Length: 279
Image 1 (cartoon, helix red, strand yellow):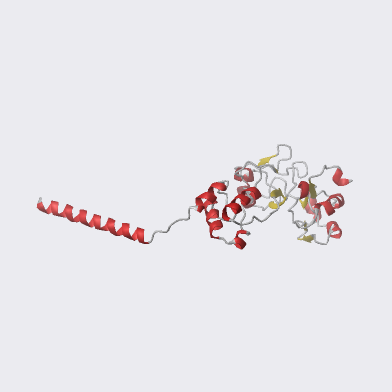
Image 2: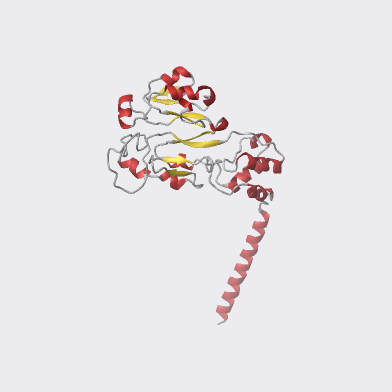
């Protein structure tokens, strides 16, 4: 009995001494967290989407606290936008950098009308799986697979499958440019682009890299690499049979002419009535 009691006392003393050591060590190496981090985190939208390039809103808040005035210019929360960054800047005594608002665009116009189904897809509803086992219903190896992975990935409900076209459509009023759709699409069909003045932007709504005749056979709105757009603006390049219009190309200056000149309708312009784009 005495042995048991002495063992219990010995173990109790060891536990007590260990606890004391751990307490003093934790106090010695304790890192005081800047209370300003909580303040900045409260300003942020709390989406934790990673669109800012950080692990989450708290990590972004920590980066803001550690940054100097110059470094702060490189930090931006796409979800909160300019108004949120101004509040963060005011809280830290910095000046917020003005940045043009952006939105996700779909570089594909392979609708049910432009690219009718050429084969039946009877498998789990998943773009990633469909991309592994099939070229897709339209036959285009680079086109939208129409299974809606991007819709499920969007944390803000900005994407939906249009029942008439069969492809995703972006609700600009909800899109925060978080980039979830960009990461999710197995064919890289989404791009984050500036919204443009008065919502006007011009881009190639196609990602097909097949040669013209083959591409057109799969989709009537496919880019055929005809080079006509490059003659309108020398910033536009055609590589791998596919045209790309940089964001630096002014929609106001070149948009209407580019849309009018494109023989397949692969080039689209937003922010104008469809009939006006062809005037």
